[in-house]
Length: 278
Image 1 (cartoon, one colour):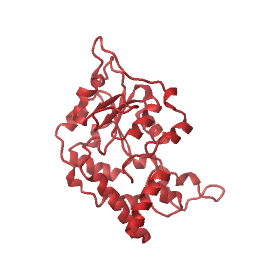
Image 2 (cartoon, rainbow, N blue to C red):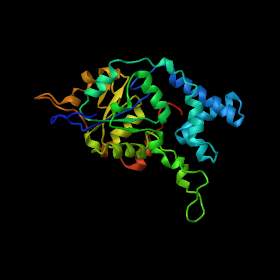
Image 3 (spheres, helix red, strand yellow):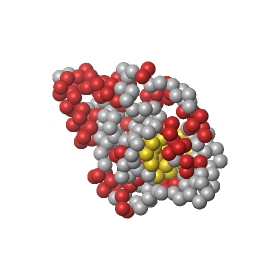
Image 4 (cartoon, rainbow, N blue to C red):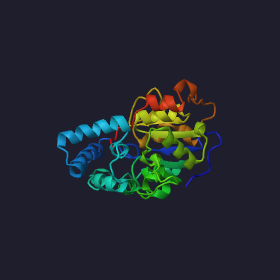
């Protein structure tokens, strides 16, 4: 768990994405997930393959994920049914063990929160393949954490006899609500929180809310990223400030939240969902 946080570090907490962040992109997990979504739509709704693929893209664009779109449109699809189909067919053997990852994570002196859109079952399988125990983290924010309302009994009604419309909303990165959940779990000031993710839109959302940001899997940082690192294995070299700012060093983090359009309305307008279309 968290070690003593260095007094000269600008960070009290590190939020870490899972897929394509703790393991490299290019494993084929993402494309396989898209294929599985298409197959789910074919099997569940009897769609032709080409219509399923176009619907996946359309729902991702308009609702943030296929599941979010299906639920918003009134289809009775439980998240467990959906995720078990998608993740039950993923080629997890393509995620290679990383012997250096657990020691690296354990060396981070701040609170460490795993922050993923994936469900807990997928998270556990991916971490197992990597050789990382969940106990390496001080907390986990996953699909279930962000969407407890979706696991309320489907026919539950409120005092007026009407189903709560809020249960139809699926919360995922990069929405304000998703990041707010992660910050509540972390229990830290966003201005002293570092967010590591492979997706530029997620990074933009974090930056707009005042987080320090690191774009993983890239050599060049995006406009909203304070840091860029080719892989999580380069973390110590890319962001040594985690372990303390060197004497005489300067920290180049821009926390001008107003400049980055941090209001809820502006943020939800300028950002779009993450690249894994689930």
